[in-house]
Image 1: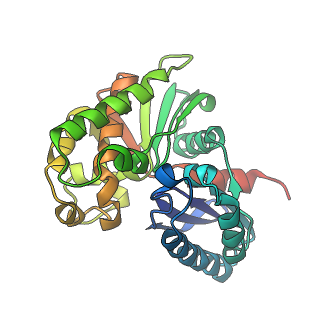
Image 2 (image 1 turned 30 degrees about the horizontal axis):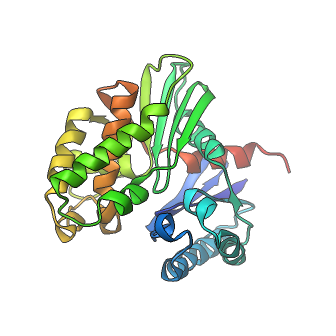
Length: 298
C-alpha cells in the first residue's frame, strides 16, 4: 500500500510518501504561508501563490508514484486565517485530496505517534514540536496521555518581537520572557524520563550545533542538543545579519528569518521540562500521519 501525507504548516510545506511503511520520498519547502497572519488575520496572497505552487508539485509527485491513500492536514496559520477555508479549497484542487484543518491537540497526538514509534521501550517521554505558529508539548508512555498546544511558534515570535537581524539585546530578552511566560502553563501527569524535539527548529539547530557542511538527516536524527549549545546559538544568531544567517551551510536559507526565535523557544522549552538536553528526531507529525493512514481500513 502506497500512502502520501502532506503537512501544510505555518512556515513549511512537507510531503512524505511511504510504500508499506518504507519511506520512498520526503520533501520540504519553506513558503512562509503564515507570514503576517498573526498581525493581519489573513493570508498574504503572494505566500498563498507560492504555497499552492509547491502543493501542486506534491500532488503531481503523488500521482507519479501511484499513491493510493492520501491525507493532508493544515495547522496553526490556517486555523487562524480568516480566509483559511478559501485557501483549503484551492489546496484540495492541486493536491487531489481535501486537506483537514486539525486542532492543536490532534497535531500533538500525530507528532507524538511519529516521534515515539521507533522506541521499543515504554519510557515516559515528552515530545516537543516547535512549529511556525504554535508549540506542542506532548507526554505519554508509548501512548499520548496529555498534551498542551500553545499559540506561539517561531514565526509568531519573530513577527512580534524580533523584526530584524541582528537583534538587539532588549529584543532577545523580551522574546525570552514571552517564551517563558507562554510555556509556564505546561504540566504533565507524570515525570518524563526522555525528551524528544521534532520539526524544523530543532533539526535546524542541531545541524548548526553539529557544524555540518550541509544538512544531513542521518547525522541530525538521534543527535543530542544541549541547553548550553542552544544558549550559545542564541548568542551567535542574535548578532548575525539575515544574509549571514542564510549563509550558514547546514541551514535552509528560507529558515534564516525565524531560526533565532526557534532557538529562543527551544531554550525555554528545555527550561520548562527541566532537561539539560533533548534528543532530536527526524520522525514527527508526517510519520504519525503515515502510520495513521496505513492503519485505517478503507
